[in-house]
Length: 270
Image (cartoon, rainbow, N blue to C red):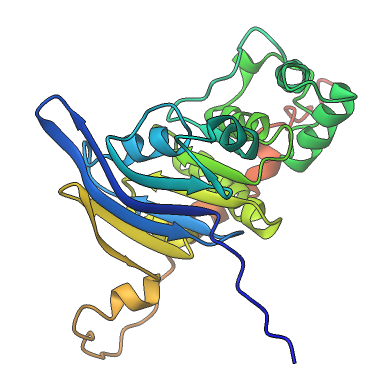
């Protein structure tokens, strides 16, 4: 009889420390991220979320502690880590002069992939940007730019993607589009580490949530377990009202179709 061993975590962090002169940002951070899951790292401004992401993506060296990403040590195997990951920062890193397709082709060529045009076309389809692929990115809405930015991060099919506050500055419709994109990434087997200040974002997306405060992880659990930390609410009969999200979607319709839709022709135009 054989026993199956659980797969190693996609990300392993133990005792991570980082200081900027006398400012101690990380004071011993510990957490693990399961493969194919969405892990949300919550914290207020200055809590150290971006510092954690920079260390895990090899852009910054820790002062102490260890971190392994995709099975590779971030300090001693940085090149292997970079081959396994992709990073999307707080602001979309797209070239507004180029078209959406040209942005994707450029990244595919930089990664030395075969047939970059086919790679670009596949990602445009995957992110519902085919119709907009021939337009300059400067004409895109905020949600479309963010979707393109994430698509560019997936060129080369990285195992792990870091999303550092991906919906900062986006309007409600664009946020919902990005949320759907993140769900689809995890469903396809990609591991997602998401940093955010928005509690509703973590509640909507994450399989597991960690809160970074005072330089340490003060809690790390599923949403259901975190809710059990507080006393149960008093049960009362309340007429269920539609949520703001339900009202918003009912009014604006399908979020994926409106970005690319052309204005309807009037009878006079015909």
